[in-house]
Length: 410
Image 1: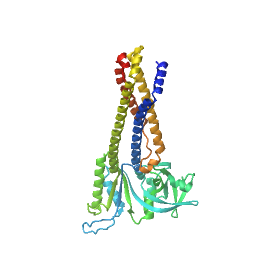
Image 2: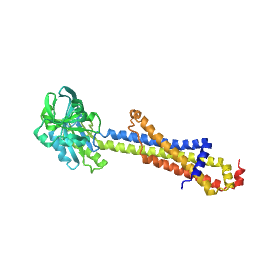
Image 3: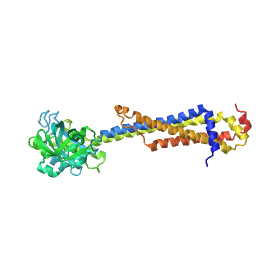
Image 4: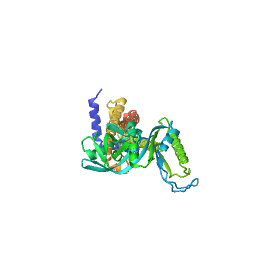
């Protein structure tokens, strides 16, 4: 039940002892503030790494060709490896169970796109319909390339959101015709990509269309695929190693030659990030616990000092009829009140600080630093409990002191 007299007495006591109240409050607020900032910065680092991988599915594997750096089987070094359509069939036959989505690629850079006087240069990619999941892109208007488009070698394109903005402004690009290096293509879809601005300035067209326009015979530039999601990280890495090996054998490349055929498996990056984040979380948790322990020790010492300083006052209270339970309850209520107010203040200051400095931290690769409310509230509750215990133990001792002894205390 709410006791107005008790709370008036508590506020009078706190106002008469401003220094000790401030010391106790600052200790708790600083502990919660530091805890909030540490976890916020840790989450900011986590957000940065997640954004780095947002542009592509973490199941993605990309295969690129280069030139040999070692002679092999009578063939000279410096030989350029050229992927062709038969490599598409070869890869799918060899790894049918391991592959989920697959697309060969043909790329053309600096293609001039023109629409009613607006123009800009973009990269055009010839792809299969399965390519969209590799980039984690999402169609926001219309549709993506279809297998019927491949079969017909249709002059259709799906453009990024920023391509539409560049050429069409606020108007829709859907079903409009764009000139690409003087050839007209129909816009059948507009996509957005979590990878950012760069990934939203690509133009996709059917692979067969791009290959017939930009390559001789059946040449292609690279392959993109996603591996079966049932594979764990270790199996995915083993798959990419085997994929590299069989392609090296097919193209007569020395197994030690890392430049001729390059296979980039995002699973490896994801594994490294997971390990890094695990270590980072452990470090932050360790420091956070250390901060809370320091706060608990600080509030405990302050409470012991406060109770000792009030020994005479407590003796007078007992002499005029105050019961031990009343004294303990008063000290504990003070302790809980100060701890709760200071802890919540530290929480607010920490959250506001993260919001204020969030943008400036991006140059240090800390993106959108924030902290989950339940984490900081939990830390504050722990400090409140600690403050309660810290107040109870010395209060109980003080309540057991005889009035005559307390009044003679120096």
